Length: 313
Image (cartoon, rainbow, N blue to C red; front, side):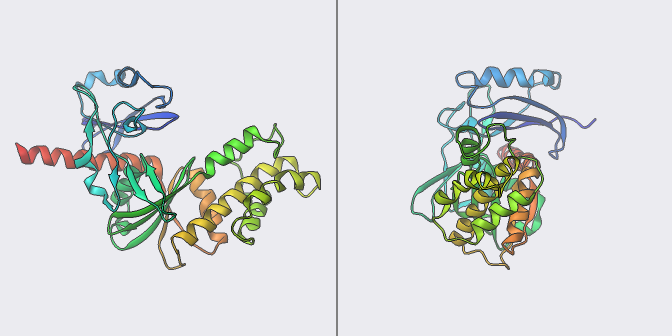
């Protein structure tokens, strides 16, 4: 077994994902724990408990991205303002405490709607995507990172110039669990098939004007009452409708053309769903696994910091 060299962690709002890595960032073992929301005031204890099985490797440097660096996290890592070079993330990281891990900063910008915008964790996934895909390192690209809060980023020569947050996933979850639009027993789509309900919602969003979403949301209920949709299809219709409106807005905001390289970074289920939706819009997308990208990004930072320490030695 290769020698363990560092611990990589993505501490999101809902989940903590840790990996024991070798020199090259290959994962030797994995661990999990509660998210940042459930770890408030006890981050050090949660981290120590999750990494306890790896104590046999001795003290190892640890790198964390995500909400551990938020204002309510372990220690606040100030945001890096855009335009930002992704490789400067390492130099602006902070140490949580005397014995704690190093925490990476998020990014901040003024978005295309002339409003403040922020992200944490996605910057590390994007840095990892650069390590995994050489094509991303040069030229201009549009990167979409679907999730609870989807991120659309303009990337040029490994610099993030602008990004936009769209709360598609959170709106879907809220309406699915707390509205009369869907059958309370309806199963969330998540990994479900890209069925006719999803395509119907997607086409409904694609073929109508911007600003119609609030009216179209009621169709989740109305189409069930009219018999156009089965109760089991309405959740997929809602997913297609929301994603379709997200794509319409994002593509318009970033002036994406068919020749502009577009990348999806996220879970396999979400990137598959978005890739299909983009194909309906006539755009091809290349997919990168978000978990792999996060580890690759943290491994990149580890190597940068190690080279920096060696240079000072």
